[in-house]
Image (tube, rainbow, N blue to C red):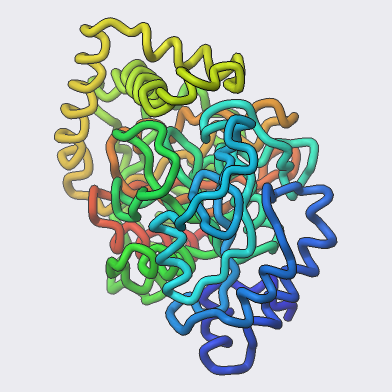
Length: 422
Protein backbone atom coordinates (compact mmCIF):
# COMPACT_ATOMS: atom_id res chain seq x y z
CA UNK A 1 0.00 0.00 0.00
CA UNK A 2 1.22 3.50 -0.83
CA UNK A 3 2.27 4.89 2.59
CA UNK A 4 0.69 8.26 1.80
CA UNK A 5 -2.73 6.58 1.86
CA UNK A 6 -2.36 5.17 5.35
CA UNK A 7 -4.40 6.69 8.12
CA UNK A 8 -2.37 8.29 10.90
CA UNK A 9 -3.05 5.40 13.27
CA UNK A 10 -2.06 2.84 10.65
CA UNK A 11 1.14 4.73 9.87
CA UNK A 12 1.92 5.20 13.57
CA UNK A 13 1.59 1.48 14.18
CA UNK A 14 3.99 0.67 11.33
CA UNK A 15 6.43 3.35 12.38
CA UNK A 16 6.44 2.01 15.92
CA UNK A 17 6.94 -1.55 14.68
CA UNK A 18 9.81 -0.47 12.44
CA UNK A 19 8.14 -1.68 9.24
CA UNK A 20 7.90 1.90 7.97
CA UNK A 21 10.48 4.65 8.28
CA UNK A 22 9.58 8.35 8.69
CA UNK A 23 11.69 9.08 5.63
CA UNK A 24 9.73 6.59 3.50
CA UNK A 25 6.39 8.00 4.66
CA UNK A 26 7.58 11.52 3.90
CA UNK A 27 8.79 10.54 0.41
CA UNK A 28 5.41 9.01 -0.39
CA UNK A 29 3.68 12.21 0.70
CA UNK A 30 6.15 14.36 -1.27
CA UNK A 31 5.51 12.27 -4.39
CA UNK A 32 1.78 12.80 -4.01
CA UNK A 33 2.25 16.54 -3.47
CA UNK A 34 4.47 16.82 -6.55
CA UNK A 35 1.78 15.18 -8.65
CA UNK A 36 -1.25 17.03 -7.28
CA UNK A 37 -0.24 20.38 -5.74
CA UNK A 38 -0.38 22.25 -9.07
CA UNK A 39 -4.10 21.44 -9.13
CA UNK A 40 -5.02 21.45 -5.43
CA UNK A 41 -2.81 24.39 -4.32
CA UNK A 42 -3.04 23.54 -0.63
CA UNK A 43 0.21 25.18 0.53
CA UNK A 44 1.34 28.71 1.29
CA UNK A 45 4.81 27.48 2.28
CA UNK A 46 6.31 24.14 1.29
CA UNK A 47 9.99 23.15 1.22
CA UNK A 48 10.57 19.48 0.33
CA UNK A 49 14.20 19.56 1.48
CA UNK A 50 13.22 20.94 4.87
CA UNK A 51 10.45 18.34 5.16
CA UNK A 52 12.94 15.56 4.46
CA UNK A 53 15.32 16.88 7.12
CA UNK A 54 12.51 17.12 9.64
CA UNK A 55 11.41 13.53 8.94
CA UNK A 56 14.95 12.25 9.39
CA UNK A 57 15.21 13.91 12.81
CA UNK A 58 11.67 13.31 14.10
CA UNK A 59 11.50 12.88 17.87
CA UNK A 60 10.07 9.77 19.49
CA UNK A 61 6.51 10.10 20.67
CA UNK A 62 2.89 9.32 19.79
CA UNK A 63 3.15 11.29 16.52
CA UNK A 64 6.65 10.07 15.62
CA UNK A 65 7.30 10.59 11.93
CA UNK A 66 3.74 11.62 10.99
CA UNK A 67 3.57 14.53 8.50
CA UNK A 68 1.33 17.37 9.66
CA UNK A 69 -0.12 20.27 7.68
CA UNK A 70 -0.38 23.54 9.61
CA UNK A 71 -2.99 26.14 8.75
CA UNK A 72 -1.31 29.47 8.08
CA UNK A 73 -3.02 30.98 11.09
CA UNK A 74 -0.54 29.27 13.46
CA UNK A 75 2.94 30.67 14.04
CA UNK A 76 5.90 28.55 13.00
CA UNK A 77 9.47 29.52 13.86
CA UNK A 78 10.94 27.98 10.70
CA UNK A 79 8.33 29.08 8.15
CA UNK A 80 6.55 32.36 7.33
CA UNK A 81 3.16 33.07 8.88
CA UNK A 82 1.01 35.41 6.81
CA UNK A 83 -2.47 34.59 8.20
CA UNK A 84 -3.94 34.71 4.71
CA UNK A 85 -3.28 38.45 4.46
CA UNK A 86 -0.88 40.50 2.31
CA UNK A 87 -0.28 42.67 5.37
CA UNK A 88 1.81 39.90 6.94
CA UNK A 89 3.43 38.56 3.77
CA UNK A 90 6.92 37.28 4.62
CA UNK A 91 6.51 37.63 8.39
CA UNK A 92 8.78 35.25 10.31
CA UNK A 93 7.74 34.58 13.92
CA UNK A 94 10.45 33.81 16.46
CA UNK A 95 8.54 30.94 18.05
CA UNK A 96 6.13 28.15 17.26
CA UNK A 97 2.53 28.40 18.33
CA UNK A 98 1.69 26.09 21.22
CA UNK A 99 -0.12 23.60 18.96
CA UNK A 100 2.88 23.35 16.63
CA UNK A 101 5.37 23.16 19.51
CA UNK A 102 3.51 20.26 21.08
CA UNK A 103 3.20 18.57 17.68
CA UNK A 104 6.96 18.60 17.27
CA UNK A 105 7.49 17.51 20.88
CA UNK A 106 5.24 14.49 20.19
CA UNK A 107 7.32 13.55 17.15
CA UNK A 108 5.12 15.07 14.45
CA UNK A 109 6.77 16.50 11.34
CA UNK A 110 5.49 19.84 10.04
CA UNK A 111 5.43 19.37 6.27
CA UNK A 112 4.26 22.88 5.36
CA UNK A 113 1.84 25.76 5.92
CA UNK A 114 -1.61 25.44 4.40
CA UNK A 115 -3.90 27.99 2.81
CA UNK A 116 -6.40 29.90 4.92
CA UNK A 117 -8.83 32.61 3.96
CA UNK A 118 -7.93 36.18 4.93
CA UNK A 119 -7.47 36.12 8.72
CA UNK A 120 -9.54 32.91 8.64
CA UNK A 121 -12.57 35.03 7.84
CA UNK A 122 -13.07 36.29 4.28
CA UNK A 123 -11.50 36.27 0.80
CA UNK A 124 -10.64 32.66 -0.12
CA UNK A 125 -7.21 31.56 -1.27
CA UNK A 126 -6.44 29.47 -4.37
CA UNK A 127 -7.06 25.98 -2.93
CA UNK A 128 -9.39 23.72 -4.92
CA UNK A 129 -11.50 20.75 -3.92
CA UNK A 130 -9.50 17.55 -4.62
CA UNK A 131 -12.62 15.80 -5.88
CA UNK A 132 -13.36 18.50 -8.47
CA UNK A 133 -11.10 21.55 -8.83
CA UNK A 134 -14.02 23.66 -10.07
CA UNK A 135 -15.51 23.50 -6.56
CA UNK A 136 -14.46 25.08 -3.27
CA UNK A 137 -12.79 22.92 -0.60
CA UNK A 138 -14.56 25.03 2.02
CA UNK A 139 -12.89 27.36 4.45
CA UNK A 140 -11.31 28.90 6.22
CA UNK A 141 -9.14 25.81 6.76
CA UNK A 142 -9.05 25.20 3.02
CA UNK A 143 -5.54 23.83 2.50
CA UNK A 144 -5.64 21.58 5.55
CA UNK A 145 -8.88 19.87 4.53
CA UNK A 146 -7.84 19.50 0.90
CA UNK A 147 -4.36 18.23 1.79
CA UNK A 148 -5.66 15.49 4.08
CA UNK A 149 -8.29 14.51 1.51
CA UNK A 150 -5.73 14.27 -1.31
CA UNK A 151 -3.12 12.30 0.69
CA UNK A 152 -0.58 15.13 1.07
CA UNK A 153 -0.38 14.48 4.83
CA UNK A 154 -2.42 12.33 7.23
CA UNK A 155 -3.01 15.05 9.85
CA UNK A 156 -3.58 18.79 9.77
CA UNK A 157 -4.55 21.70 11.98
CA UNK A 158 -7.52 23.92 11.37
CA UNK A 159 -9.44 26.43 13.42
CA UNK A 160 -13.15 27.15 13.72
CA UNK A 161 -14.89 30.42 14.56
CA UNK A 162 -18.10 29.61 12.67
CA UNK A 163 -17.69 26.45 10.56
CA UNK A 164 -14.07 26.40 9.40
CA UNK A 165 -13.23 22.81 10.40
CA UNK A 166 -16.48 20.92 10.06
CA UNK A 167 -17.62 22.42 6.74
CA UNK A 168 -14.37 21.93 4.74
CA UNK A 169 -14.03 18.43 6.18
CA UNK A 170 -17.50 17.61 4.88
CA UNK A 171 -16.82 19.21 1.48
CA UNK A 172 -13.53 17.33 1.05
CA UNK A 173 -14.61 13.96 2.47
CA UNK A 174 -12.36 13.87 5.52
CA UNK A 175 -13.01 13.54 9.23
CA UNK A 176 -13.05 16.90 11.02
CA UNK A 177 -12.97 17.37 14.78
CA UNK A 178 -13.71 20.66 16.53
CA UNK A 179 -13.00 19.95 20.19
CA UNK A 180 -14.63 21.52 23.18
CA UNK A 181 -13.66 25.18 23.42
CA UNK A 182 -10.10 25.55 24.71
CA UNK A 183 -9.09 21.88 24.65
CA UNK A 184 -6.11 22.67 22.37
CA UNK A 185 -4.19 25.81 23.26
CA UNK A 186 -4.63 28.84 20.98
CA UNK A 187 -1.39 30.48 22.10
CA UNK A 188 0.53 31.65 19.05
CA UNK A 189 -2.49 31.41 16.76
CA UNK A 190 -3.60 34.68 15.16
CA UNK A 191 -6.69 35.49 17.23
CA UNK A 192 -9.96 36.59 15.70
CA UNK A 193 -12.89 36.01 18.07
CA UNK A 194 -11.87 35.20 21.63
CA UNK A 195 -15.29 33.79 22.51
CA UNK A 196 -15.35 31.42 19.55
CA UNK A 197 -11.92 30.53 18.09
CA UNK A 198 -11.26 26.82 18.57
CA UNK A 199 -8.28 24.80 17.36
CA UNK A 200 -9.43 21.72 15.45
CA UNK A 201 -7.95 18.88 13.44
CA UNK A 202 -8.42 17.02 10.15
CA UNK A 203 -7.65 13.36 9.56
CA UNK A 204 -8.87 10.27 7.71
CA UNK A 205 -10.43 8.51 10.68
CA UNK A 206 -11.95 9.40 14.03
CA UNK A 207 -9.17 7.49 15.80
CA UNK A 208 -6.62 9.65 13.96
CA UNK A 209 -8.29 12.77 15.34
CA UNK A 210 -8.19 11.38 18.86
CA UNK A 211 -4.52 10.45 18.52
CA UNK A 212 -3.56 13.89 17.21
CA UNK A 213 -5.65 16.01 19.56
CA UNK A 214 -4.59 14.00 22.62
CA UNK A 215 -0.93 14.35 21.72
CA UNK A 216 -1.06 18.13 21.38
CA UNK A 217 -3.48 18.85 24.22
CA UNK A 218 -2.15 16.44 26.85
CA UNK A 219 -5.70 15.22 27.44
CA UNK A 220 -6.92 11.63 27.44
CA UNK A 221 -9.35 11.14 24.57
CA UNK A 222 -9.61 7.37 24.61
CA UNK A 223 -9.51 4.90 21.76
CA UNK A 224 -12.50 5.44 19.47
CA UNK A 225 -11.81 2.10 17.76
CA UNK A 226 -12.69 0.25 20.97
CA UNK A 227 -16.20 -1.10 20.54
CA UNK A 228 -18.65 0.22 23.18
CA UNK A 229 -20.81 -2.19 25.16
CA UNK A 230 -24.05 -0.71 23.82
CA UNK A 231 -25.38 1.31 20.90
CA UNK A 232 -25.80 5.08 21.25
CA UNK A 233 -28.90 7.08 22.06
CA UNK A 234 -29.05 9.63 19.25
CA UNK A 235 -31.05 12.82 18.97
CA UNK A 236 -31.83 13.74 15.36
CA UNK A 237 -31.49 17.52 15.42
CA UNK A 238 -32.48 19.42 12.31
CA UNK A 239 -31.72 22.72 14.11
CA UNK A 240 -33.00 26.22 13.22
CA UNK A 241 -30.81 26.01 10.08
CA UNK A 242 -32.88 23.23 8.51
CA UNK A 243 -34.46 25.67 6.05
CA UNK A 244 -31.05 25.90 4.35
CA UNK A 245 -30.66 22.14 3.80
CA UNK A 246 -30.28 21.08 0.18
CA UNK A 247 -32.25 18.07 -1.07
CA UNK A 248 -29.20 15.83 -0.82
CA UNK A 249 -28.76 16.79 2.85
CA UNK A 250 -32.42 16.20 3.67
CA UNK A 251 -32.16 12.73 2.13
CA UNK A 252 -28.79 12.10 3.83
CA UNK A 253 -30.04 12.81 7.34
CA UNK A 254 -33.11 10.61 6.91
CA UNK A 255 -31.04 7.81 5.40
CA UNK A 256 -28.40 8.02 8.13
CA UNK A 257 -31.03 7.92 10.85
CA UNK A 258 -32.61 4.79 9.34
CA UNK A 259 -29.24 3.06 8.92
CA UNK A 260 -28.19 3.83 12.50
CA UNK A 261 -31.50 2.57 13.85
CA UNK A 262 -31.03 -0.70 11.96
CA UNK A 263 -27.55 -0.96 13.48
CA UNK A 264 -29.09 -0.83 16.96
CA UNK A 265 -29.04 2.86 17.89
CA UNK A 266 -32.00 4.49 19.57
CA UNK A 267 -32.87 7.43 17.34
CA UNK A 268 -35.38 10.10 18.25
CA UNK A 269 -36.16 13.61 17.06
CA UNK A 270 -34.71 16.27 19.33
CA UNK A 271 -35.29 19.91 18.46
CA UNK A 272 -33.42 22.81 19.97
CA UNK A 273 -35.66 25.08 22.08
CA UNK A 274 -36.94 28.17 20.29
CA UNK A 275 -34.55 30.51 22.11
CA UNK A 276 -31.57 28.90 20.35
CA UNK A 277 -32.70 30.55 17.11
CA UNK A 278 -31.39 33.83 18.58
CA UNK A 279 -27.85 32.57 17.92
CA UNK A 280 -28.42 33.36 14.23
CA UNK A 281 -28.29 37.05 15.19
CA UNK A 282 -25.93 36.78 18.15
CA UNK A 283 -23.11 34.83 16.49
CA UNK A 284 -22.23 37.34 13.73
CA UNK A 285 -22.34 40.22 16.21
CA UNK A 286 -19.89 38.52 18.58
CA UNK A 287 -17.68 37.14 15.80
CA UNK A 288 -17.34 40.37 13.85
CA UNK A 289 -17.04 42.63 16.89
CA UNK A 290 -14.30 40.50 18.43
CA UNK A 291 -12.55 40.12 15.06
CA UNK A 292 -12.46 43.88 14.61
CA UNK A 293 -11.02 44.33 18.09
CA UNK A 294 -8.42 41.62 17.40
CA UNK A 295 -7.36 43.41 14.21
CA UNK A 296 -6.85 46.75 15.95
CA UNK A 297 -3.24 47.10 14.74
CA UNK A 298 -4.14 46.26 11.16
CA UNK A 299 -7.03 48.73 11.18
CA UNK A 300 -4.78 51.46 12.55
CA UNK A 301 -1.64 50.86 10.47
CA UNK A 302 -2.45 48.70 7.42
CA UNK A 303 -6.07 49.34 6.60
CA UNK A 304 -5.35 49.36 2.87
CA UNK A 305 -4.30 45.69 3.11
CA UNK A 306 -7.71 44.57 4.39
CA UNK A 307 -10.08 43.37 1.69
CA UNK A 308 -13.34 45.19 1.08
CA UNK A 309 -15.24 42.04 2.01
CA UNK A 310 -13.56 41.76 5.39
CA UNK A 311 -13.75 45.51 6.05
CA UNK A 312 -17.50 45.30 5.57
CA UNK A 313 -17.79 42.66 8.30
CA UNK A 314 -15.43 44.49 10.66
CA UNK A 315 -17.45 47.68 10.21
CA UNK A 316 -20.60 45.72 10.96
CA UNK A 317 -19.06 44.54 14.22
CA UNK A 318 -17.79 47.94 15.29
CA UNK A 319 -21.10 49.69 14.63
CA UNK A 320 -23.31 47.46 16.77
CA UNK A 321 -25.06 49.25 19.60
CA UNK A 322 -24.32 48.51 23.23
CA UNK A 323 -27.77 46.95 23.54
CA UNK A 324 -27.15 44.63 20.57
CA UNK A 325 -23.78 43.56 21.96
CA UNK A 326 -25.15 42.91 25.43
CA UNK A 327 -28.04 40.89 24.00
CA UNK A 328 -25.66 38.81 21.86
CA UNK A 329 -23.45 37.87 24.80
CA UNK A 330 -26.52 37.18 26.92
CA UNK A 331 -27.74 34.79 24.22
CA UNK A 332 -24.40 32.98 24.31
CA UNK A 333 -24.54 32.59 28.09
CA UNK A 334 -28.16 31.47 28.15
CA UNK A 335 -27.89 28.88 25.39
CA UNK A 336 -24.61 27.48 26.73
CA UNK A 337 -26.26 26.99 30.12
CA UNK A 338 -29.39 25.49 28.58
CA UNK A 339 -27.70 23.02 26.23
CA UNK A 340 -27.16 20.17 28.75
CA UNK A 341 -30.93 19.99 29.13
CA UNK A 342 -31.31 19.59 25.37
CA UNK A 343 -29.24 16.40 25.43
CA UNK A 344 -30.87 14.86 28.52
CA UNK A 345 -31.38 11.14 27.95
CA UNK A 346 -29.14 11.14 24.88
CA UNK A 347 -25.50 10.42 24.15
CA UNK A 348 -25.10 12.70 21.15
CA UNK A 349 -26.98 14.77 18.59
CA UNK A 350 -26.85 14.09 14.85
CA UNK A 351 -27.19 17.02 12.45
CA UNK A 352 -25.99 18.06 8.98
CA UNK A 353 -22.39 19.18 8.58
CA UNK A 354 -23.17 21.57 5.71
CA UNK A 355 -26.19 22.61 3.63
CA UNK A 356 -25.12 20.30 0.79
CA UNK A 357 -22.09 19.38 -1.27
CA UNK A 358 -19.32 21.90 -1.99
CA UNK A 359 -20.53 24.86 -4.08
CA UNK A 360 -19.17 25.48 -7.54
CA UNK A 361 -16.47 28.15 -7.81
CA UNK A 362 -13.62 29.32 -5.59
CA UNK A 363 -14.94 32.76 -4.67
CA UNK A 364 -17.03 31.50 -1.74
CA UNK A 365 -16.21 28.79 0.77
CA UNK A 366 -19.81 27.87 1.60
CA UNK A 367 -22.36 28.61 4.28
CA UNK A 368 -21.56 27.79 7.95
CA UNK A 369 -25.24 27.75 8.86
CA UNK A 370 -25.06 24.20 10.26
CA UNK A 371 -21.94 24.97 12.30
CA UNK A 372 -22.13 28.36 14.02
CA UNK A 373 -24.67 27.19 16.63
CA UNK A 374 -22.38 24.47 17.96
CA UNK A 375 -19.31 26.71 17.85
CA UNK A 376 -21.22 29.29 19.90
CA UNK A 377 -22.15 26.58 22.41
CA UNK A 378 -18.47 25.52 22.79
CA UNK A 379 -19.37 21.84 22.45
CA UNK A 380 -17.36 19.14 20.62
CA UNK A 381 -18.30 18.40 17.01
CA UNK A 382 -17.13 15.66 14.65
CA UNK A 383 -18.01 15.22 10.99
CA UNK A 384 -17.61 11.90 9.24
CA UNK A 385 -17.94 11.44 5.47
CA UNK A 386 -20.93 9.52 4.20
CA UNK A 387 -22.43 9.51 0.73
CA UNK A 388 -22.20 11.93 -2.18
CA UNK A 389 -24.23 14.77 -3.61
CA UNK A 390 -25.70 15.21 -7.08
CA UNK A 391 -22.32 16.25 -8.55
CA UNK A 392 -20.50 13.28 -7.00
CA UNK A 393 -18.89 15.39 -4.25
CA UNK A 394 -18.65 14.16 -0.66
CA UNK A 395 -21.25 14.75 2.02
CA UNK A 396 -20.74 14.59 5.78
CA UNK A 397 -22.83 14.02 8.87
CA UNK A 398 -22.10 15.94 12.08
CA UNK A 399 -22.05 14.49 15.59
CA UNK A 400 -22.48 16.85 18.56
CA UNK A 401 -21.49 16.01 22.13
CA UNK A 402 -21.61 17.67 25.52
CA UNK A 403 -19.06 20.26 26.61
CA UNK A 404 -15.84 18.60 27.79
CA UNK A 405 -17.21 15.14 26.95
CA UNK A 406 -14.87 14.80 23.98
CA UNK A 407 -13.75 11.22 24.54
CA UNK A 408 -17.33 9.96 24.47
CA UNK A 409 -18.16 12.17 21.47
CA UNK A 410 -15.24 10.70 19.54
CA UNK A 411 -16.17 7.14 20.55
CA UNK A 412 -19.79 7.56 19.39
CA UNK A 413 -18.59 9.25 16.21
CA UNK A 414 -16.54 6.18 15.35
CA UNK A 415 -19.53 3.94 16.06
CA UNK A 416 -21.59 6.07 13.67
CA UNK A 417 -18.85 6.12 11.03
CA UNK A 418 -18.61 2.32 11.16
CA UNK A 419 -22.38 1.87 11.03
CA UNK A 420 -22.60 4.19 8.02
CA UNK A 421 -19.87 2.28 6.26
CA UNK A 422 -17.07 4.80 6.79
